Amino acid sequence: MSRIVLLALLCSGIALSVNPSTVRAQSFAAVGNLDCNGFSKVQTPLKPTMACADFFNSAEGHRGYDNGHYIGHDEPSIDFVSTAPHSGSSLQYDITLPVERPLPATQSFENYATFWFSMAICDPNSFPNGPCLAASDENTPAQAGSAVLELQLYPPGFPPFITQISCDLEHWCAALTIDSLEIVNAGSNAGSLNPNCPEPVNFAFLQRNGVPSGPPGPATATNATFTPNKQTLLMNQGDHLRITLEETPAGLLTRIDDLTSGQSGFMVASGANGFQNTDPNTCAGANFDFHPEFDTAKFGNFVPWAALQANIDFAYEIGHFQVGPNGDNDSDDPPCFPGPTVAGCLGANTDFDGTSYLFDWPDGSPNKPQSAQLRSVRGGGIGPLSLSDGTGDFTQPYPIIFFQTEIAASEPACMPNGVGCTVPPVGAKFYPFHALVGNSYAPGGCALLFGNFNGPGVENFGQDKQYGAPNLPWFFANNSGGPQANPCIPQTGQ
Image 1 (cartoon, rainbow, N blue to C red):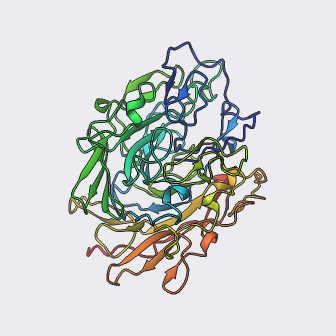
Image 2: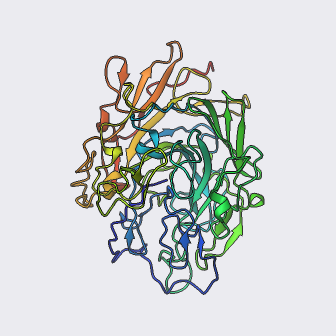
Image 3: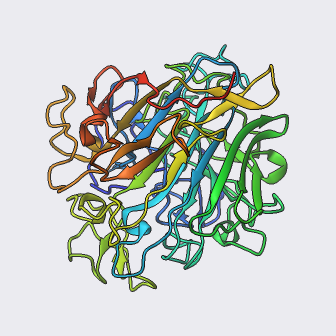
């Protein structure tokens, strides 16, 4: 879910700090997915450049630290809010993928490593470690064990995936990821972040046959987990997709129907498919069926440890790319790669001078990339539609939205009182924003774009001002514009 910012700051006096004496002896593979951020004390990461869920210390309101490293992120998002039954557990999106423009135009992978669709997920082994009822608003966010599911879509042009961003040079691909937060809950070290498995992650590509390419579990993942095979769903640039996240008895189903090619891919987050949750004390994995945490997407049904107010979100993972075989030779640039399309680096970019923070975003001009276009599965509006008991179909719109980002957490000057928590961050020449074109009744309805769109017929919500002020009641480094009416609510005919 997130950009890894390796400031290497030591954590002191924070309840979610790491205590190396907290974990019982356990044997694990030398490489794996016990820590999405790559700082496990017992394991190196299979994929060093994963997009991870940003965590913070919800008890004390501090930034999150992983074995002495501050973990920062940049995930500008739009969140969808609804009190309709199943709005937090079963829904569909409609999106059209961008088409890459010929070089020397900026490529999508230079601006973002992925965009993703999220949902709060039950995991009683994840913080706050309480029992969790599947798809139920009886869960109390501050008590029920909670994880973050993301359906991540990856742009083409910068393979191989296991070390870089893309599945291949031409196609998009997608994966289901689930991030948990392991806080020791027994013994004298209860309340400490487990240093061996701080943020374990399940990962599986969406496959045409629904069978993972390799073991998804944090303790069982192998190179095959991150290597596309002949069954991996590959999508062409410009394809029109219907995306489904739906509760099933076996676990949460994620599915992409490519309406242009006729191909489909899916993955169920089930123990039968090898998905696992992780013992917060020993890091041992056990096969587990992951289900939605909440039935509705009402405001407040959020993952309590995520820096974003995370549930039904659509977000871009930005801040990963610095052009050049050695970037600009800053210490925050590596690792670097010679191509294959553009030479560049996938490091922290803590000085905010990479392509994500330049005027290289989609703006409608031919020398810039195209934007993805988020619409509605029934046309006429933007955002997901949730499952209706009355019709048995996806017909319920989300009447409320809000914009947010946690980029300020990566700014050293951002203080707990909100001072210095700015968007754009200091050093950035530009910060991308969401924009709306069209309207509910126009031919083709309206579409939500992302980049640098301005001019007649464009509603850009104040450009980067859409992210609002520091959200002090949640986390000081979360900037939020606050709830507002969906500006182009889908017309479902109901």
